[in-house]
Image (cartoon, rainbow, N blue to C red):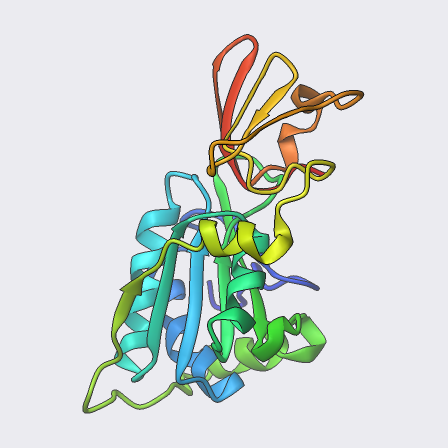
Length: 216
């Protein structure tokens, strides 16, 4: 991985473990705080099998650099984008490969106020830092990891919209079930055709889908 092919125009994406693995995730955790001058970072991940270990390695790199981590756990990308300014963090990292096949994973980055980080606005520099082993020093006092369930804040913050189906936990027979117990009847929306863009989902029957994320 001496060329870091996983660094793309708008995010990091690559096959696991040849292009993205726990070693690279750890190094990203050591480099990103320097890039954005971070003391607190929000992270989250999708349902891919490799996401947990990548999240753990990323958290280790961040906390060893003295950064406090707010871990949203399994969530949608938009929840990290929402939580970063809402929780007054200096940046956010979502572990996901979006629509790519299961053997892939990746990361999306934002700075303070959820300003996106692309190749020309930070990823290129972070890639250079990693290739040259320029990392944050090992902090005398490691950062902390706080598990945080953002769902209720996300919904109360007005981010739960029926037309985008954000925050929906289940879809069955043209009905959307939300975490607060409400039910919306969705007309003219074929959810089954759109679930490919959800960060994580699972079909448990021909007409029932459980998921966390956004359908677009």
